Structures are given as structure tokens and as C-alpha cells.
Image (spheres, rainbow, N blue to C red):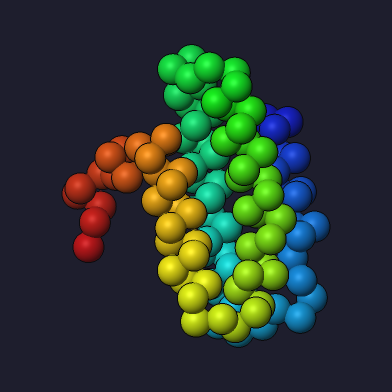
Length: 106
């Protein structure tokens, strides 16, 4: 496991709120995994982007990941819409959705 992946994992663990429970925890973990996938995809494509783009994407991912628990714990019905839009924004750069294996989609 790379140092940057361990750092991100530590950030994710450290950012977890003790008050998260039930559905919010499941939802938070799902979103967290999706953002981690985008970060990993970005790292695999690193040579295709400028250092500025990589730095900006990593900073944006860190900010989102640091707040994901907070967003989900708010209980706001719009949180799914907000996170969905954020994921679509990241997908605009990483193109992760285009990498999906159609044989694994149910």
C-alpha cells in the first residue's frame, strides 16, 4: 500500500464521527469508497494530467473526505444530491465511470 493511500485511509478513519450510526454510517462508507476510487483512478492516470490538476484534485478530495461524515450526519435530504454532484464533478476529470466493467454491473 502506498504512503499516499495510507495517508488518505488515516484521514478517512480520523474524520469519522463517533455519533454516526445505522444508515448514515452505511451511506458515509459508500460515499467514502466512491471518493477513494476516484483518487485511485486519478493516481493511475497521473501522467495524463499536469501537476497543478493533480494537486487541485487531491486537495478537493481531501476537503470532501474530511466533511463527508458531517454532510451525512446532518440528515439533510439534499446530501445525496450534493454528494452525487460532487462525484459527477470528479468523474468529469477521472472518467472512472467509463472504466466500469459492464460484465460486473447487475
